[in-house]
Length: 230
Image (tube, rainbow, N blue to C red; front, side, top):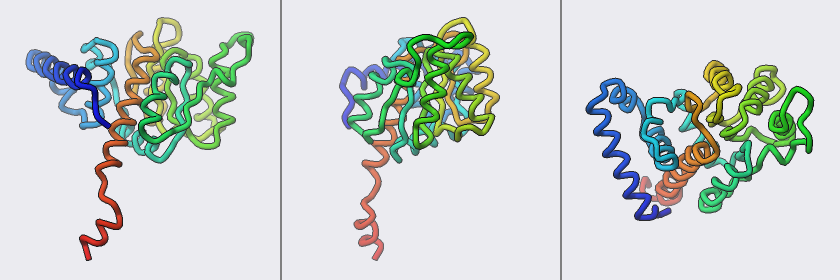
């Protein structure tokens, strides 16, 4: 899986910029130092997608969540998104890697929003009931869908997802849903504040897919490893 030269140069520039900012900001330097290589990949790809290096101060990783998400993707976990845009944005990387099933919760949403709720919230409930195994969930636009997910897991109605990438964008219900995600105990990656969106959740997922695929490609063949150890 070869990166385009423009992407490679962009990542080089992002790393240089982060290094400059960290040199002037001890708090940022400490935050970056706590990231493992996979978390750095996710951060860099999110910055590349958004053009916003300040994301580094607001991107939070539940310990071990990124590795768990990458492992789940490598094992074929389905990917559930809250928008068709996010589903379309991860589809090319999925085709180049593990071929995971990619679905949008709106496929289960009613034509009209239920009274007092949203189409996304109803679609999340339907999707979680229909999927045969825990998905990796991407929420870039719908805090109500994130709330339904958290409520259903807390009530024991559905198993915990493999990973939640929680980055709903906006000003209504967004901060609350991110706060609830932070306290949920679920494996997750979240972006604090009002920022988020389909491009960012897709960028994070694509970083995990790419890292998992490269790791799988570099793993020694079991037969060859057995022969070399004989």
